Image 1 (cartoon, chains in turn red, orange):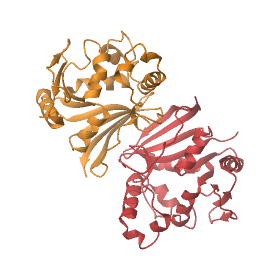
Image 2 (cartoon, each protein chain N blue to C red):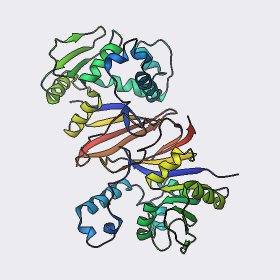
Image 3 (cartoon, helix red, strand yellow):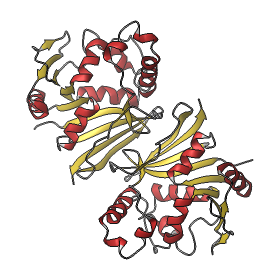
Image 4 (cartoon, rainbow over the protein chains, first blue to last red):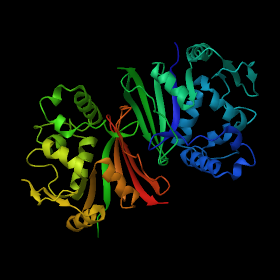
Length: 221
Length: 221
């Protein structure tokens, strides 16, 4: 049995999944850290993801240290990773992650990066191998499905890659951790969603003390 | 003890509280009903509010007929109205409602309409009286607080009036019925919200089979 194709992101109450973009090189340079735009970007990410950082599983997987909270948030974060047999991601997310992830990248499965860049597969310790796919999302998703077997394929992000899959009718289900913050500006998760073609069916809504975990099935309309 | 100031709206998952605006006169004219823009507007409203229409209390209050569903959605709809001692609304919402509400308007309390139009109070059967306030939101809210006593004041809408109150630090709490639809276009609830000044504290998150009822307290930041 083939797995599902899903995405799972954290969204601000006003619909953003990322703050206003700043250049990747500024985020990771010493000068960038004094740049108010970069500082705002960091602050907003931290606020958006505030539910995830204290979780035991998140800390383990990103090598942030031992200990951490257990409970619904932790269970959901862990379950999301455990169901995932392969991921598809866009180039910008990969570029950010390449600098931010620990050496043992947090996927532990094959990851298919949709990009124009030609590059050999990049194998990381711990089971993550990044494959660079130059012929579009259908090809990347097909390869991801194949290696995932009966586990699910996660469209990891960013928002453009998620929307491309959603609008193409390729997403079966998605989850949103709805975060109690307003962003006011940034990248909207659903900006460009083809509302005339996507119908949603509520599957689960699970409140924790920090966020509400919403899951919807996607149907054509 | 003074009551709270709150708003309570239904929002699409992508953040809209109303479809793209169409002229009020088209909505209520026979020709308008054949206009595809008006038809789309009607369809989108119906989808957004699909959770409310079947509820027993909603049907009673809007004189739509007897019977209807009981349960969490009905309880919340009823409780929202019962806590409300007075409402504040914008002119456009009033203009739409003036044509859409039954003769016995569904508020049963004083309603303060923020408008440039000078008009005598308009008393409806059943206890609703519309007062037309020409000197801004602070004046309207002050008058509403006074008549509400220890009950709460609802900022009824539309989105501009809600945002004016939110950005001015006048809202204590709000509730959103998060509806499983994507709008893609229309009026965003939080468009223009001053994210740098508004901090949210999650109060309750209550899923029904149709929507998730989210409640947040508002704090300055």
